[in-house]
Amino acid sequence: MRKPLVAGNWKMNGSRDAAQDLIAGIRRGFEAGVSADVAICPPFVYLTQVGGLLDGSDIALGGQNVSQHESGAYTGEVAPAMLADVGCEYVILGHSERRSYYGEDDALVADKVVAAHAAGLKPILCVGETLDQREADRTEAVVASQLDALLNSAEGLAALKTGVIAYEPVWAIGTGKTASPQQAQDMHAFIRQRVAAKDAELGAKIRILYGGSVKGNNAAELFAMADIDGGLIGGASLQVDEFLTICQAAQ
Ligand code: 13P
Image (cartoon, rainbow, N blue to C red; front, side):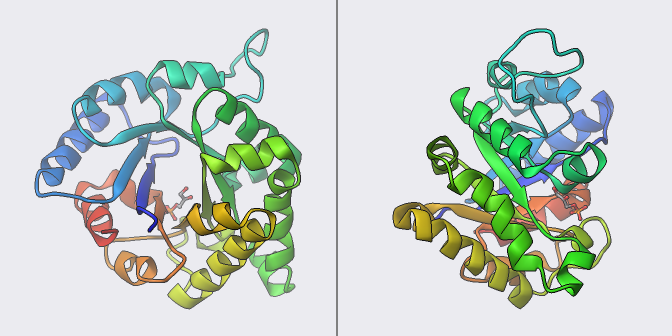
């Protein structure tokens, strides 16, 4: 049985005050009981603050990106060991915003996933197609190549064994357009089969999250699908009530 995971990706939003209010609200809501795993991924500069605010809770901390390098002269970058050092358990990698705005390709994303794993972090590998790719019937081919960058190497496969996959169709991110539960389930099943073809045990065990306009009012129907093991939440993770409703839907 896979334990659901809900991860809040704050993206480039927030402030010290907003983080304080948001975490206080989420922790109050958790007193009513949430059985899913939950992680919060704030911007780098708030990791230490949010980590402190989460102390003594079961909520995990995660980063939104990391360097593929261990350390050294890489101005502006953050090393995997640094994320581990400030208490991160997870790191989101290959988000479509990193792929499209910062030119991260499948090979770079794979290097980051491997580097994160080497530092003891659990990578959350994001995959997903654009609207053009879906309309051109290339959804499976695109997602397959994003996965194969990891599945085709021993280190990549090893890194995925501690990791999580997030299917985020680009056309559903921040647009209010959610994939239908069946559209999402079809892709989750495809992803699971592709992993299972390399490693049957991993295919059965790996958590595959759905992301893209998940809200309090659509989370339960998505999470009810057989291969959807929780969500990667953007906008709704910045609102206490919405985020709590989503966490509660992932029981
Ligand atoms: P939204 O939930 O705002 O659509 O963002 C999804 C996402 O990109 C999470 O990583």
